[in-house]
Image (cartoon, rainbow, N blue to C red; front, side):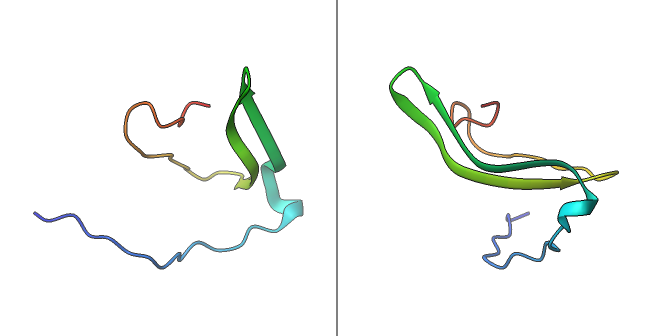
Length: 61
């Protein structure tokens, strides 16, 4: 089975008042190194969200 790659995002916009967790313009540093730059994210209630990527790329950050 060959993995499929899509460049289209088919995720619906989450209304701010319906978001259970929301982060706006987050920056995160490890010492002097910027790990996250201007991250904004809304996670709706009763949904599953997954962060995927290779080992060591900052998913847990």
